[in-house]
Image (tube, rainbow, N blue to C red; front, top):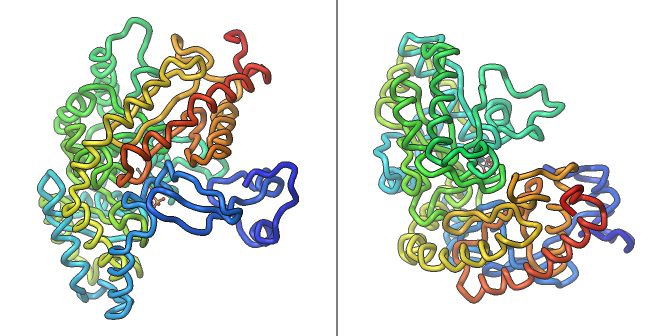
Length: 467
Ligand SMILES: Cc1ncc(COP(=O)(O)O)c(C=O)c1O
């Protein structure tokens, strides 16, 4: 981990020589070296120096059951012993794939007809768009292909998923986004609301913007709209009140499908099984991954409603074969662990647990809302963020975005907390199993760390005219 002064360890040197790290600045990485995590238990992980951290991000928003869950480990062991690999190509199947798909259909709040598997969230969202195109070709409307996504949304990094992601870092130097993807305003009232604009007016403006865009592009050319319930990697942005209710009629009016990206919010995170319930999203299909297996095995799923499934199945009949699928899509290990994870969520009532502990989590988080470094404290269920700002009133950004967020992240790490700075939004998404005592422990160093980051920001001139 960030050692500016200590020499790099052998593992850190080997890491630098052997790996290109995702979402890492390789030049800085060569100087500071990797942070080597060796083991995990419950909400904690331990590094190679023996230091213990609360994993305040559940890894990458995925380890809802924490680390070292013996039931998940045993389910994986059993499946490896019975059938370590099989695929679903050419009509083959296996029991865990069927069982998990049935379970997903049972749990998702809107009736879904078919499940298609991949290994990652990016693959799920890439599949969504391929299937929608395939369907529209089958329905004789080949021009209906454009996709609407949102600024600050995150949908992955493959070519189309990366295009739908509304963050410049996923586009820069990659020649993205593709021009058939259009981005609309992020429904973040605090930052995007205009002076004097009420939240309901803001929502009405965004619904009008969506309508105008579809009309300008031609509704016959717009296939789908994609959204996360709470935007995760964009900075844990909770949609303005009434946002999804306001846009649903616009999508319906123009016959535009609604893809619900539940990759982070699915399986209890927001205090319901899916974010679609918490935020009243009228989706036509959904993407799931991450907590689907508690993060222990890579697996993603796309759930399609009956109308889409029927159209896609009919179209497969016009070709020798349905030419889409991944070697590891529906891997038996992932499906078996997924079945077990969902069974555990139900048996241990994880939704009930999240509802029970989330009020304390949100209260603690929001208690820092009036710290001079904090612009907004926000969240839903067991996820949240402190967005840092030199001026709360005007929602001002720092002149050099990301520096103060990185400083706070480093301060917290030194105090045993793994959090994630997304620009200047410091995000938290702890394992859902976290207890109230562990929530107290998670937030205990925040005041001191915020004070230290504030003093640093002031000394370094990051507060500008607001110092
Ligand atoms: C909402 C959402 N969708 C899609 C993805 C992409 O998933 P993956 O990294 O597994 O490709 C992510 C990853 O963080 C995500 O948060």
